[in-house]
Length: 173
Image (cartoon, rainbow, N blue to C red; front, side, top):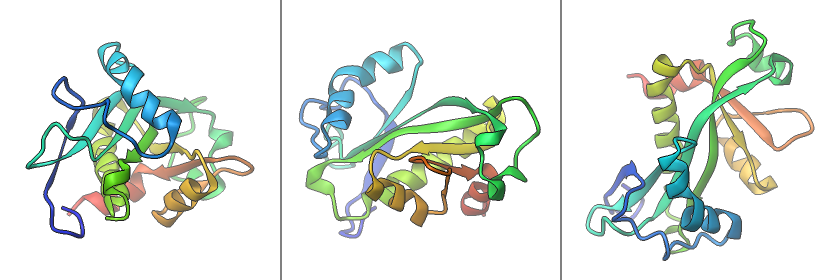
């Protein structure tokens, strides 16, 4: 539900969703959803989830992608390092893309999508092994958005991380 009381549902991208009408104002995100997302789903390269209004299930209000990821422990900020195992590669979940359609922007759906992405990542962490969520911000504004939700920025980059331990505190009752 958003600030206007409209109900939304989250589901995997499917054939009934109108990808051609999606416009978030960022060309690379629009093109991804329109031209590559379905192919990534078929190839199991990314899981693509769409947020749709309950009363217009084909309309995409927003989307995000998740996939397995690994990064070197040295790339993890000291403040998050205490929450990860000491392996050559740290298993993580990559929040590769997140976008809200222009017609739905300004209604809190970005935060709603992020909360749902974190819940999905946490839900699946036990099955696939993931100690954190990694986000690659496409702009300084996006990095600030992630930072405002508790993500820790890696030095001199647009990459941010959020340990599963922190996510657990957000999603577990």
